[in-house]
Image 1 (tube, rainbow, N blue to C red):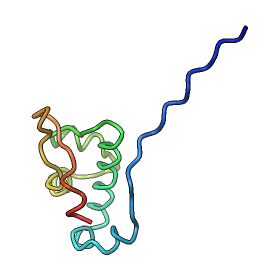
Image 2 (image 1 turned 90 degrees about the vertical axis):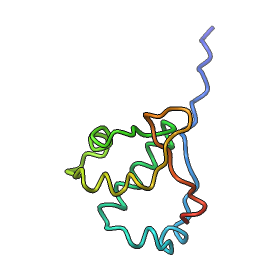
Image 3 (image 1 turned 45 degrees about the horizontal axis):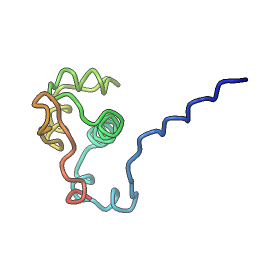
Length: 97
């Protein structure tokens, strides 16, 4: 008798409202590079729960010829994880968008 396969693990996701994103003053004031870094880091947070607080590690995650200066700007969009001082989580997105 064949083994039953395990149910597929559901991919993590987050709600994204394009109208809110495009109308957000905070997002609109970002450069395209900052915006790209920010959405990429939000995706990492969605998948892993948080991102490292160390700027060099974030730079490694983002890659794409980014700079430490850009990382440090976007890093301000995140807050310390209350459960782990070496990690960051997104600030309240409801207030952002």
